Image (cartoon, rainbow, N blue to C red; front, top):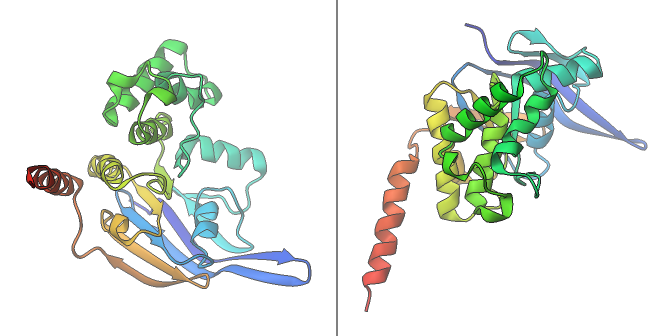
Length: 253
């Protein structure tokens, strides 16, 4: 089985007036099916530009990009939009849920643009399946303002899953969440990954990156480190530790 992501000597140069900004420099990267990769780096390292290229939201200036075996570098806007809809699921720092729409309806939304079309009954079934997958079936009829931050992010993850993508892309998915809720969300990602989902996540948080299987660190548009996570964190263990710490605090006189 070939890589889901194959970047070969990719460059991305932005022109700002007379100034050229070399955001990604001669970068090569492969991500195999079933991997869980964190892309890390300081502001200006190129990690967001790389994520935009991987997500077909931006084009490389030079180099080749194969997504799930499809050469996407030279595709037109319509073909890229179809690739994004059929092969990619996106999760962002902001949940981007429609305020007056239930969790179920928010998750169903991407299926309205599916080709071939999905029937309403099939769409509802798939949306409920996605909500169950993230442990949110009991909140299907709730509006976003009736859910916690963690529940809203899980609804956003379910929305990304409903098209059954080859690759899940997460951009700072815990950036707006407290510690406990962040662990809950990383637990969802770990369960999805254990089930075979390929996940690439941008994060600046070292502890969050330790929930992944592999960390790729960027600096000045280049990869400076690419290694397996040695002392990986597991969400279940961390939740038990947080519970024990909270109980200890409650027992203090």
